[in-house]
Each structure stands twice: as structure tokens, then as C-alpha cells.
Image (cartoon, rainbow, N blue to C red; front, side, top):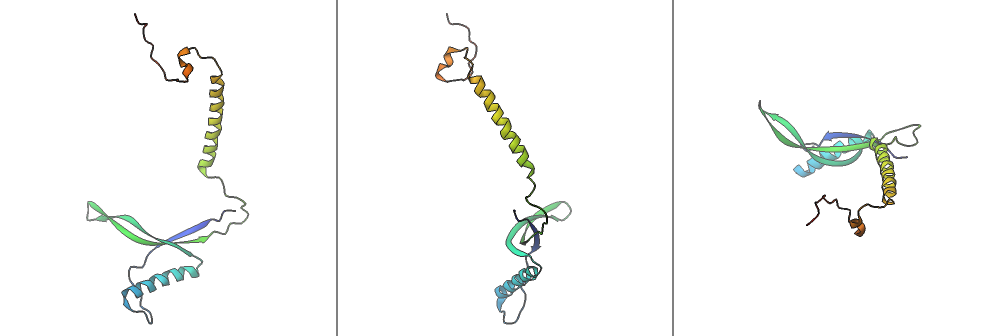
Length: 137
């Protein structure tokens, strides 16, 4: 059975967090990040990754600007009972139909290849369409 997950995305801490024995801005920032991750881990969330994503925000009355936000992504398994396999994805059925149609089309084309050609010029296997030209004098 394929495991399914639910996801949670939170803003990454912008400021560090003070703690006993932690010195410097880098240490405080790491401590703030660690605290955020551990708090969600207690709720069953697994840290997955950090992403920087664009966000369109209004600037004034008529313009907007793109601001990049740092986000933390977490996941945890969903508890599904009585489900043996996931339902097919919407495009799976469509692709199967396309393959069946393509196979039927190939069979039709194969049967058409068995009929004799009217043009003796196509004996070399070149099936490029040729325009009807008047005979030369």
C-alpha cells in the first residue's frame, strides 16, 4: 500500500531565539529553527525541507512586487483504514484508453498495408504524397 501524507507549511523563523549558552546571531537563529522543528515533531510532523517561494504583494494602490518567503515544509502519515490501494489517478484511465485506441489504429493500418498499391512509383517505400502533374510532352 502506498503511504499517503498530509503536509503543513509554516514561515521559517525570521529572528533568532535566545537560549542558555547560545551566543551570536547564527546560534540564536539555529536555536529558533530547531525549536520550531521540534515543536511540530512533538505533534507527529516530520521536517521535510525548507523552500524559498515567491509571493506577489501589493505595493501602494496600483502596483505589486514579488517578495521571497522562506517556508518550512513538514509532513505526517495519514491513517487510512480499510483502503487496500489508492484510487487511480484521473489521467491513468485516459492513458489506458489512448493506448487501446493506438493499438486498434495500428491494427487497422497494418491491414491497410496488405492491400496492393495503385502507384508503382511507391515500390521503394517512399509514401510521400505527390501532386498530380500533367504528362510531359
